[in-house]
Image (cartoon, rainbow, N blue to C red; front, side):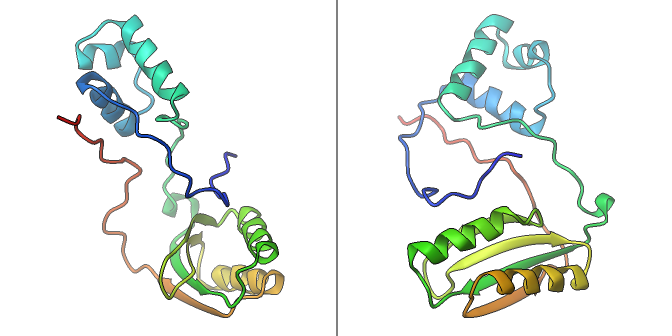
Length: 171
């Protein structure tokens, strides 16, 4: 399973320059990555070879990280989504390494962000129910010292997408 959690996640890179065809290709792939090369080429109005070369270059440049299937959590019985706000009194490298390792080992943590401000971290945790969340919570605090935890249960998902807005070309 690909890893997303990284201590160097804040490292920035120079944005890749995209033209209109690149943006169309990326929009199509974000909507449905299972489209065939023929379908993509037809929809962007280009032939297969140039489209394939563009996709290859976008992968090599790191614009396209990977292609995945997006699953329905409720269909898998994962009906409870918690946003977990974490404050810690510890900020040393050893604590951070233990915390990141604890998150990596827990598949129910589907997003984790280090924040600026009063809250140090926010986690998105997808579980079956409140009891499953409590097991997750007890396990986490048993492994890593945490100053304060606030769990917020999502009552309804209003919007969820993995699609990024694709910037227009600079003029």
